[in-house]
Length: 562
Image 1 (spheres, rainbow, N blue to C red):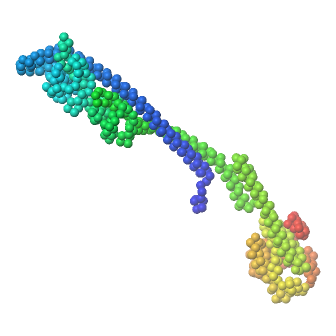
Image 2 (tube, rainbow, N blue to C red):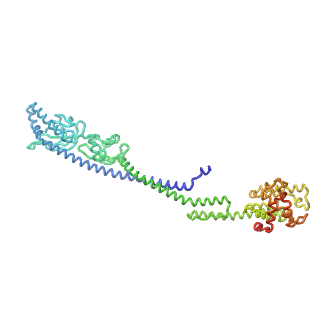
Image 3 (cartoon, helix red, strand yellow):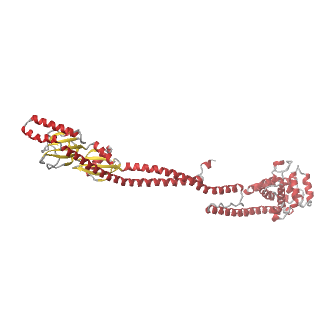
């Protein structure tokens, strides 16, 4: 059991294992190819999305600036504001402080009303000399009264649309001049929107991408992660790229630049890895269903294939095991018809078994001939016993058939009986060939021949099954036999048969000191001694078999009991 437990796997398991491994490798390759394709497609789609976002941003910014400019133009037509602003320089030259204060209050009041109606962080009113007269709005404190304004139109009467800096912050500026009836510029009205984090987040929502605002090579606002923002700011400070791909904080980004004016730029960015992961996850979820179906199909197909392969091999293996257990070299395996290879293997095995059968028959004939040669050599020492071994063998087989012994038992009996007196080779000629009765000492010498015979056969392995016949064929039911003095059924059946056959042939053969008895007399003598010297059932079997016994040396095995 341990050898089977730790032995190689069954062919069914190996076939299914190979099929599953193959399917798994194919699925892994498919996943790898899909991942690479998704990544390539994401690179292309990210670039397209950024270009689209860039166009959307440009359009939105243009629209926003147009709306702001329209608002500023509308505000610039405020009559109260224009009247106060037009009067303010004259009062300033006249030195009327009270009147100036009243005019500034009017201007501040009107700017406050205007700031509440527009979407900007500050409204700034400057005089023709670009000095701040008043400001209103959330970040109005960045432009205090009297401070010069360094941005704006270079020529009086021109509008302005660009980026300006105030108090270390960048602002998107829209400017419109304030004109009187003769088209004289009495001042300029500015709307300022700060480019801060809120502005970047609003743009990110509009473009559907991450954003970054860079002014004077510094990052003013971004929706990038902190680590990526630092590395992007460093890259922009060095090269100020327009578009392309870069790796920030271990992640690839594609980007596009839109110039807002001066040294201020707006970048749209998108993480290629993040987009690829999302797309890949979606593709992998779709592939999961394919994997499940492929695995199920592989299981069914591999089981079917393994069964088709192993079932005929299993039948062939069982047939081989049955032949090995029965030692049947004459049987032939039927062709399975499942494959040419198995049929070729079966035919080769059948041819091999045929050759083994021939070789075994030749070997059997060879050692049977050797046994007969030994028996003939023994018989040649005593002309009165010539043919004795062959006749005892024939009689023993006849008795065995009468007792319905198997073919294998008959073959053992036949050769064992042929060798039953082989031990007499060691008996001296003066004892073996003595013409008269033996003395007690001489009979003791003769009684050693079963032991000598068994000793001779033990040196020949293929004769081991015949040793009990050779060694015990002189044992008697009453226990007075030799060499061991066995009783009754303790004596092997083959030895009992050879004992009766040997006694019958001895009585019916002539000796130098007496003549041959008739067959009927010999049978009577055997019956007289049945139960003491001979087994009664063996004597009965001999009496039944005698009419069919012949003694042709070359055909004994075929004719005895036929």
